[in-house]
Image (cartoon, rainbow, N blue to C red; front, side, top):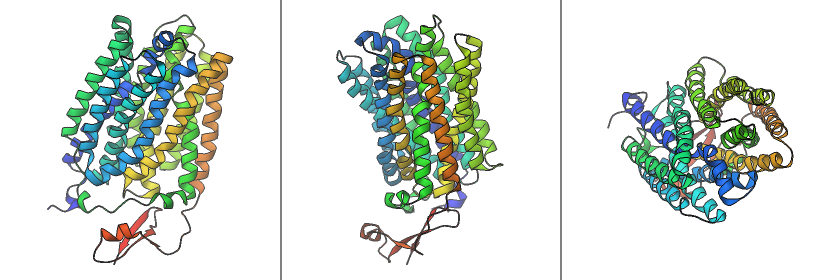
Length: 427
C-alpha cells in the first residue's frame, strides 16, 4: 500500500473535491431554493410567515443534527454508502411532500427527506476532503463547498420558474429526481481518504465539551445561524411585499457571490491569520444587513446587499471546517464537525420562524435589525473562542475499553497536541 504522505494533496484528492462540489450543489440547490417556493406554500396552507418558515427551519435542524452521526459513520465506513442513502432520502422526501395536504405532514416529509439528504452529503463529504489534503486543505475545502453557492445560484431561480409554470408540487418532484441523480453521480467519486483504514478515532465528545474553545465557538455559531438564513427564506417574499419581483434572482446572487467568497478567502486563509479572517467574515455578514435595511425597494441596492452578504457568507462557510481542523486537529474531523454543526441546526431551527413572527407583528426592518443583533452577539462570542486557551488537562486521558479493543497491542491515551488538537498515544 502506498504511504499516506505520497497520496495526500494528489490528483485523486481533487476528484473527491469534484464529487463533494457535485453533492453540495445537489442538496443545497434544493434546500436554499425554498425561498422561491415560500409564498406558494404559505398561500396553499393559509398560514403565517413563521409557520411556513418551519419547512426550512426543521430541515436545517435535521441536517445539522444528522451530521453528528453521518460524519462519524463516514469516518468509519467511508462516504459512499452514506451519500447513496442521502440520494434515496432526497428523492423520496420531495416526492412525498408533493402529495401532502396537511402542513404538519409536510413538515415531516420535507424536513426528514431533505434534512437527512443534506446531512448525508455535507459533513461526510467535507470531512472526507479534509482527510485527502494537508498542504492545500483550506483551498480544497473552499472549492468543495463552492457547490453550495452554485447550487443556490441555479436552484433558486429554477425553482421559481418551475413554480410559476407548473406549481410547487410538480416543482418538488423535479427537484427530487434531479438531486437524487446528482448524488448518485457524486457517489462514484466519493472515496475514503488514504490511510483511513488505520485512522485514529475522533476525540470523544465529552472532551470537546470540556474545551472552552469548542463551547464558545458552538454558541457563537448558534447565534450567527439564527440570522444567517433569513435572506434564503424571506428575500423573495420581501420583494413581493414591496410590489417588486426578482427575489429568487437575488437569492441566486447570494449563491454566486458566495462562491467567490469560498474560493478567494479559502485561498487567502493560508497566508493570513485564520481566526482573524474568520472574524472579519462575521463582521461583514452583520454589516451587510444594514444595507438591506437602507435599500428598501431599490433593486440595485439590494443587489449590493446580496453581493456583500454572499461573499461574507461564502467565506464563513469555507473557513469553518478549516478553523475546526486548526483548533481541534484533523483526526476524526467528521465527528468534530458534526458535533459543532448542531449549533447551526439549533440557530436555523429557531431563527427563521422567530423572524417570521416578528415580521408579521411589526415589519421587515425590525426583523432585519434583530438579525444584525444576532450577528453582533456571535462576534463577541467568537472573539472569546479565539482568546480561550487549550484545555488544561492532565498529561493524558485514558480512553475507554471500547477504544482499547481496537488496539490489541496495548492501551491508548488522548493527549493535547501543541497546536490545540488531541493526539492519540498507544503502547
